Image 1 (cartoon, one colour):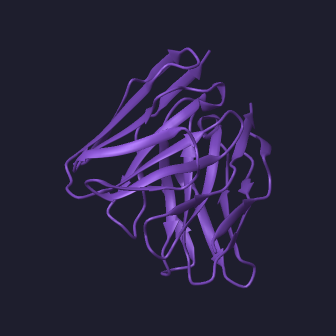
Image 2: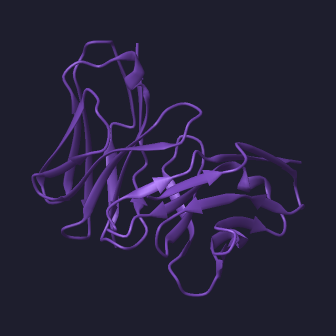
Length: 111
Length: 113
């Protein structure tokens, strides 16, 4: 069966510090991968999606970036965090034309 | 272009009474539609999905939704609310490329004992 992991589960970091969130998927190959952000009291915002290794599409301009160094690994990064980057970050995967499967999420607080 | 509108940001029901969470969509083609549930500080779990088969879709935990093309709606219902149903619910439409999902802003369901 397929599983999706995210770490860390929670993170508190100061403004201006770097960020690295990792997402890995097990039990499937060549998945589509997604990063979403959920700000407090708001819906989900798609940040990035990837249909293959090294292929990243960005949905909104921001100081975040994403990379897919391996087929089932998706990394969300920032060189300098802003207060507005606080939120709940969700990684998801699918095989196209089907529902998405979400990870447990990472709660990021920028102080 | 695709979009989803969840008509209520908060819904409060008494335990044992029916639940109705409303969702309207906009799509230039026959859409695929989903409902997800999110419990506090947890990831999202799929409740049900519509992909152009039966218009009445049954999901997990007693939830169901009806696709009404004439009304461009996909409302989520449950005959009898349980305390464990208290959560955030998201209506989602999928782009025909299969690569992009558009989420509504969510409806927070409170169940009163």
